[in-house]
Length: 370
Image 1 (cartoon, rainbow, N blue to C red):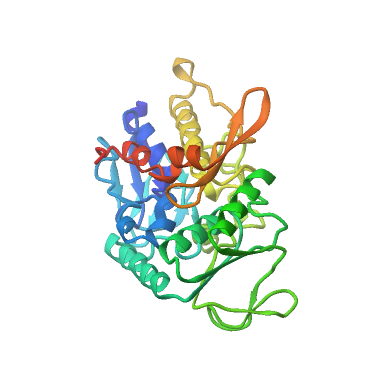
Image 2: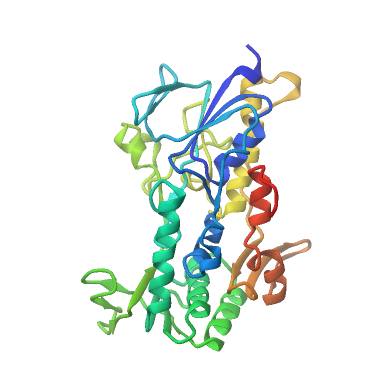
């Protein structure tokens, strides 16, 4: 049996899964399984939630992703490792020679694909747009990349509203960037009349937007409240399927140096879903997809033609940009001979803020640029 008729099944069509599927399409029989109707470019979701012109920008059809393989809309609910079958919600059992779990992570509103169809997700974005436009006050809780970006987007979308960003750390972007990036973010936000509250932990005693208090008991409130305080790996389905021993205490899949599920030579886990210690960014997911393509080829070819598996090396620093609307932002750039460079508004606008990486994703999905 040759490599190009070995069946590679990939669960999850996000950044890691889509990249891997495209990489293997020419030399393996690829099935990509995802319940969503289209690829979701999450990087564009925060602007889509605030700007009507961007409502449909995050959605890219899968129809040009694969030439030889296929994309199946369904949901995985279990794995029969002895028979090498992926069990779907419809009851179908999909055979595999290699299985890849790339189910990503669940994000808080508005950075998520709500529902299963583009129409449902777009309707959710339009709802957020209306709420933001009508609000007299908006509160964003969490000063990481998503919180900073969302605070900037809602400020630009509604110049009349009172906008507040509350962050539990001493500096913005404290877990993801450098001190200089945090200072640039705070400077931009305060220049645009966003109130920045640092060292402020927020808890809720009531429903969304009600009963909010900081750690001193001081009441916080707003017409519209967004929480941007973290993500959850999409691995509950594995736990329910009796594979909880694959997971660490945070719910991430434990993998070895080749991104294989620990103890399994034929099952890989890539992207936000695994326990690799590096920043969970879209470039990281893409890099893991590329690395896994090589290791799957090595596994299917049993080392022929010089293909040997290569350990995946986490990147200590990747290019990392946080937009402040289309014309601003801050960027962390690895630099030869020194730790990092931090770029400002003009460079970040050209690198990411104006287009939010959509041309790159259209190319990845095999779609023509508009």
